Image 1 (spheres, rainbow, N blue to C red):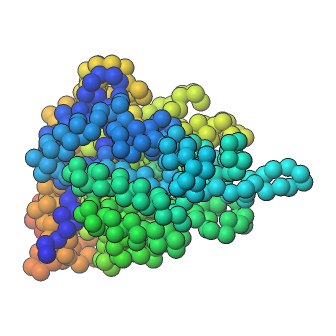
Image 2: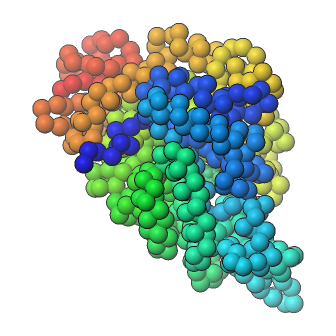
Image 3: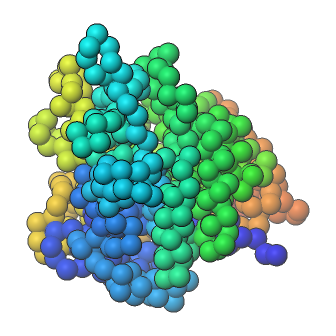
Length: 528
Ligand code: GLC
């Protein structure tokens, strides 16, 4: 059999609400994506991953699903999704949706039935009695949630607590029960029959909980009670029978600090085709510089996973983190630093996914007031904060809202995103940083990304089957890939100084004109 299609592919992540508004109501939508498919194709993209577009109260911008079988009305409807799939397929672009399996919205009918103990939904979620301490009712244990505060919430109706590891309105599903599997299979079947090619599996590391439900010894590390546990693997194996049955590719988000062994277990044993792990987000210093030792180690690790039979998603950012170029703005030349990082990451063995706006170097937004944040996580943190000023400062750096400002298509009104005022912010640099200008500038990040991905395709066999050897000489770092008679060498100069290079006759990519030395922030790809 030939190599699975996704191993040779480039992905593009679309934060739908902020990408392109097709009906001018201020929200990005499926029509908007259809409009931009040709642009996406021009990047060399083989598949798109669309953040959740199902009916939702939008407490967590779609990760709180009310009805999996309905497209939210701000995004369109199933007919438009079908059109999108058709057009994408005609361009040879596959379509991956976001599958939220750890939790639903509290407004989902499964939850409403569960809260009313209506069978067979009574145990669809994780319900526990409270603990009576000194005559007072308390949460079943001390577990804290990811988004702040206890992970348990009391239901007056059911007189019990439900577990909710993200936020109050997103109750966790109980996979010790068979009913959720039955319902979720229907969801997969519904979209597979519509022509969807796969799913990014949200928060999948957390679907298994420590079933003793005892207190966590270190309350601040509560996530260890519900991350990467053995029952997660058990449930995933079950899910995998559906993924295979409907021929769906899967990529799983693995938070909660998985070990290298965990990552391999998920991806080698075919529980998930590809895994997202997040070590690369730790290679930046507080001064927003790149830490070269950490960087090279992290690249090596990603590589090793794919070498050992697992498969890594290669990415620098997504909708949950600040913009890449803002993370490295302590470097003298952030734009070329980004190109160094891009070439280094995206020539590894694995599947690269770029996040909308990354390709034009979109930057973090300037949040000025505590009330500026839209994201539920930021709001939770601030509402429970003991030190608002400090938390505000942290959020100014790390808020998820940074990645969700609207896509900057042009210097026109609302950056070409919509005729109407957008649901969220527009970065004030949009007149200088947008797709239209980037298209015209020969040396823009956009056009460099195109070159990098064109080359990756051209040398895909070297990248996929080659042997990697990493090097780091005082910040001049990279790797050599050997495959049969072909060898590629990627060298990035992150040392801050000019660097000597030995011979550079066969340079096939460089972000600067080639000279006798490598300039600071120059990255080259050579055939060696
Ligand atoms: C994942 C998503 C994030 C969401 C959370 C809960 O981490 O990427 O955006 O808030 O899961 O669904």
